[in-house]
Length: 188
Image (cartoon, rainbow, N blue to C red; front, side, top):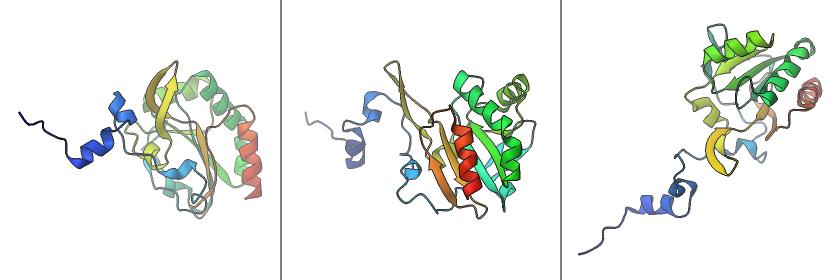
């Protein structure tokens, strides 16, 4: 009996890829985190539900600088420290003409609880669909304790008043990061 072969496209994606090893399939991330060709590009548009109700969109920040930071999960140690640092420096960011928006895949209810528990003053938005996270290339395969999964890679984008990407910080280390972003905002 003749053996059936998979269509060419199926064979191509099944050859030694993460998908062939049982990991959820997703479209490859855009090369935003590879700074080659990223700077100066228009930031992908978005409209997301945000803490406290309502929505946050890129258009809301037209004419101002935007610090768009992505964090893996609300109320975890690194994410909490990062949000507290941004909240502590919010006034200085504002005086430098910048707004701050933190984005995770957490539901809005979790963002509201996170914001209330830690007295955060920055805006937080939810992308449970991962559409915006994928558009910015921060929804990626990660490994923890030998287990592979899809999740948010902690990253920060500085978007200029013209909605173009001015700078990208991939795979952020939290300690001192908010202060480094403030210095970049002041230099823009």
